[in-house]
Image 1 (cartoon, one colour):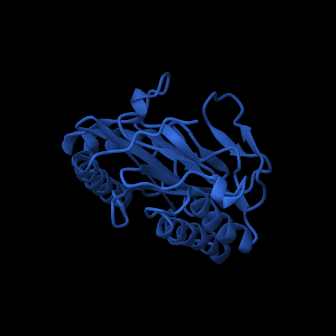
Image 2 (spheres, rainbow, N blue to C red; image 1 turned 90 degrees about the vertical axis):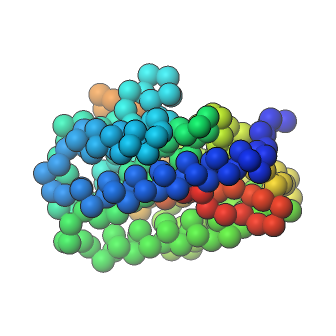
Image 3 (tube, rainbow, N blue to C red; image 1 turned 90 degrees about the horizontal axis):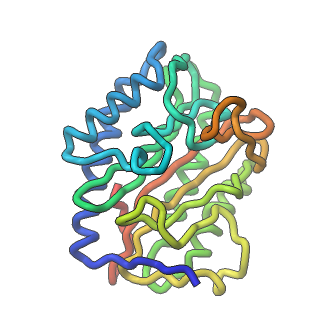
Length: 252
C-alpha cells in the first residue's frame, strides 16, 4: 500500500502561499514569450522570478535535471529541457514549473499558442485540456475517490477524440516534488478500488494528452524529453490542489 503524506492545515497554508507565488511567476513569465526567444532564455527568466518570490527551483532538486522549467514545443510532451531552440509564431508551448518554498513544493503547468496565428483546431484542442482539468479538480473533494478525478479527465479527452498519454500521471506533492499517490488520466480499475480522498491530501492533477496517439517516445539525443510517438501535438495542464475538511481548492 502506498504511503500518502497527509498535510496539516498549517502545512497547507504554507503550500498555498508558495502556490500563489508560483502562479505569480507564471503570470510574469508568459507575456515575455515571443517569437525568437530561446527556451534557455525563458528558463533563466523563470529562475530569476522564482528567486524574487523567495523560492527555489523544484525541478533542480530532481537528480540529474539541471533546469528550472520543462519547456515542451508541439510534439514534445513532458520533461523537455531548455535549449537554444527558438520559439516560432504559432508554436504550442507547454511551461511546466515547480517552486520549493519554505520546505514544500508546488507544481504547475500551462499550455498555449505563441503569437496570434493559430489553427482553430489547436485552439479547440487546448480548450478541451483546460476543461478536463477543471472537471477533474471539481472531483477533488473529501470522501470522493481518486478514480473520479481520472474518470473526469478521460471522459473529456476521449470524448473529444483526443488521447491520454497513459504512461504519464499526476501525483502527490509536498516535501517531495513527487509523492504518492499517482493519479492516472484514465481509469485503470473500478472507482471504488482507487484511493479515497481524505482531508490533508495535496495532489498535482495533470492532464497530459495528444491529438493523435497515447504512445510516447524519447526524443533522439535527449535523455529527458518525451515526445508523441507519431509526432502529433501534445499539451499539459496542471494545478496543485489541496483537500480540506470541506472541499478541495487550487493552490497554484
